[in-house]
Length: 286
Image 1 (tube, rainbow, N blue to C red):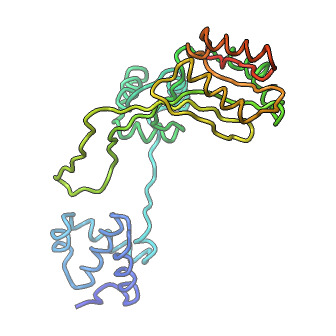
Image 2: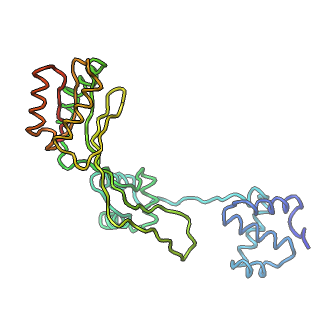
Image 3: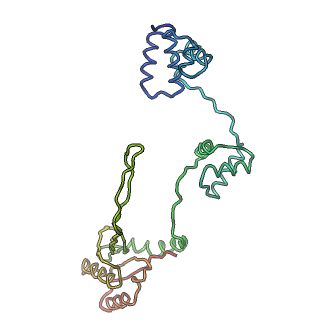
């Protein structure tokens, strides 16, 4: 039996909406109305849906007064915020000045400072509305000196990059040390089961000494068991072979010990005595 309270077209529309991702409260209203339309009593509907009979009657009144659109609309009205505008501003200033690891810790600050209690879930929503997101901080070198780096870029690195051309090529030189080992990644696994990933017996490292040209970004590299002064000289000779007619080859590198060793300095002096091929500039980190 159907047609007790719903128009046929409304019943059909409710059934279509039930097959889609309709919000749960709307789903519950439509369930109640469809059962009423099948001739169920409000008390029986309430028992089946685990709600009270008065709520069922309220759903029926909503349909009678607002129709299908009223049933499908959620009219939630937000309450007054627990914190005043001044308190919210103070909370934002606190979070700008100090890093809190959990929403629970922020709740403790709010309770201590303003006497207002929040759950961690409610606080996370509030922080989102205030423009905060939960993310990791950005790591920077412990000895980084921003002013010295800015000066180096302005006075040394910038002019070198601007002047780089085929006659005076510029390279950025550094070593990298990738390791061959197992790294687990996420995948779909049946709940309650465990998939195993066998790790390597030992960690195997390789060392790659490389140079990246600017602005062409050509890559010159050497793979070696260990980066030493001798390996640096071999890399410089590879660059030399790539630019036999260049007026100068400029290299930007870091302060690793093998980059300014006695052997490297002696080789550079010898090269300078016969040409002006190499000019090495340290990449300042402090």
